[in-house]
Length: 265
Image (cartoon, rainbow, N blue to C red; front, side, top):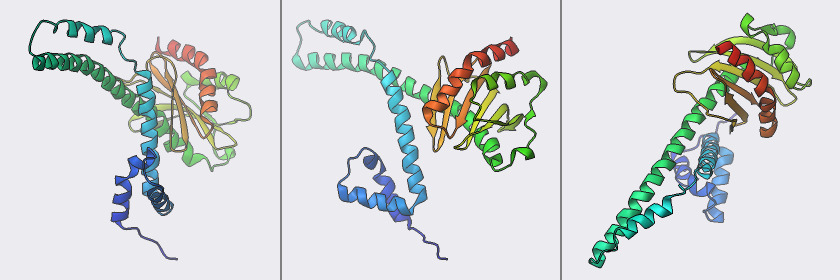
């Protein structure tokens, strides 16, 4: 069996054109050339997919960032201050300065929102990491090989809570406390017709916040949804369609939040 090796020059050329390819800005011939390279190179294919995922997350963040309502009024106020008679060149400079100040503050706000989005993406990967580390390696094990309920006593009530809201066709195959990258997780794993569904719960660490509402993303083949209670981060991670993964967490959220808030009280 022969192993094909690809030269670094082809990969460098592909990576240099990758953003234009994702934006559909290349000529047909160049697109075909990159697609042929993707068929041979897993690394470049993975890089292209990761760039698409990051771009989607940033586009979602930018859509949520609105231009400040008072931006136009602030620009007009600055312009009115420059209406005293003066040389045109200095008048134009004043206009430019006014625009720079106003738009600069808006851009700063936008960057802050994007940094916040990156921080949230990092938090979302916390639950994903435990799923990949703990549930995925066990998916080939028969249920008889695993003691299903190994939860600590204070979390035993989670079992009836999840049984009320997770569909019967998703049998619980493992419920336990595990550790990954220096933090503890309460981890319930369900078997689905497509793979695995994990409910992952971990205590928040300093500075971690998802704010209000639900957050959702996809990383490679995994769907991740999350929300926070007073002291915990709660995730569903699965191979299910995005909306199905999110719907399960939405159904679980009120009962889980009540249970976890009582623990943290």
